[in-house]
Length: 155
Image: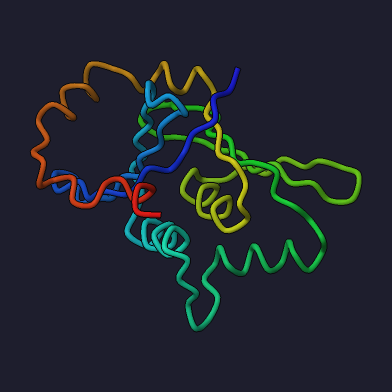
């Protein structure tokens, strides 16, 4: 089973010096934080803010490439969590065939945002990530650690 997730924002994790993509389900009951690098966070942020760079970034190029061949991104799916690493697949329709491409979750999300495609997470991923370790980490955060968390409320 899969659950549709919505990107609620990005935050900086000062303890790991990394960025976190915050995904939530429709009801807000499930949260999926995915740690990403600075470049990936920048690409996701640009897509969230509808900022077009002067020259295409990798995800802009990927979208242009798919558009040139009339291929459509159907969805991005966070498929697994193993040893603190998330895995994802991008589902693409080309002609009458559907293709699945392995991707890092950050790349899958960045491309899905540019293509207005939904993002999903497998239920097993949501179950695995809701560990005591994550809960404890979240409890230790201070409000100032979050910065601007929910970018969807401003739109």
